[in-house]
Image (spheres, rainbow, N blue to C red):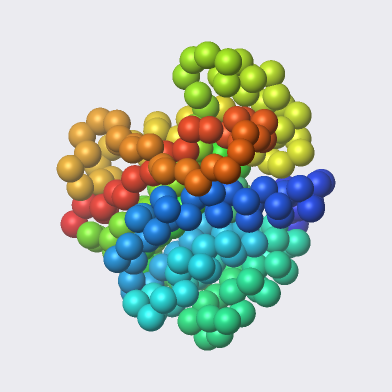
Amino acid sequence: MKETNKLGRLDKLSRKVLIDTSKMLKDAKTELFDGIHGRVLEVGAGIGVNVYFLNRPEVEHWVAVEPDRKLVEECHKMVAEMEDRVTVFQGYLHELEEPPESFDYVVFTTLLCSVPDPHKIVAEAHRMLKPGGKLCIIEHIGDKFGFRSAFQMLFKYPWKFATGCNCRNKPIPALSQPGFWEGIDGEINFKPAPLRVKRFSPLLELTKPFVMTELTKKS
Ligand SMILES: C[S@@+](CC[C@H](N)C(=O)[O-])C[C@H]1O[C@@H](n2cnc3c(N)ncnc32)[C@H](O)[C@@H]1O
């Protein structure tokens, strides 16, 4: 595996952003992960913030895939309480030695903003899902109009350099690959993700709005 350290340039900022983002998405994640069970695959698990939602008896095993070595070290600590019900895999999804169609759920939380080839990741995740299995997604997307949109365009490259994240993320084409999902003919639909926001933050303005959905693999 090629060694990566995407979030290593500004470690402390990156860690804080991941934790604050997950706290802000508490209500969205509670709703999205309601009913999650069985074998769960998370792609780009970061430092493992989703442990607060996945450490439940219904989750038989969680495989957390993360390529960044420093984040993997933190992830191990964060998920330790789940003992042998979790595996942290340092590497990319295509390197994971698990049989295809062996997961009940795949989780992406703010992932597609950070991957170079979102179509490929979505196709690989789809391959790992059992027929009828679900892909749970929360993403932030580039805003369409107005001041926030202009602000994102201005800071797109410095932000990308600092964090590895594209604040003008456009995940719909990668997620809308034909024939993948039950009841989807054309583009997938997101709904707005509720946010817990206490005060104005320029960093948050770079990433708003957040959206979410659950997609079911065709049987
Ligand atoms: C914005 S962070 C989100 C982390 C975590 N999902 C969360 O909600 O806190 C994006 C993550 O995607 C990971 N990543 C980047 N490219 C990836 C790839 N090709 N495959 C899997 N993960 C990747 C990064 O290392 C990083 O941990």
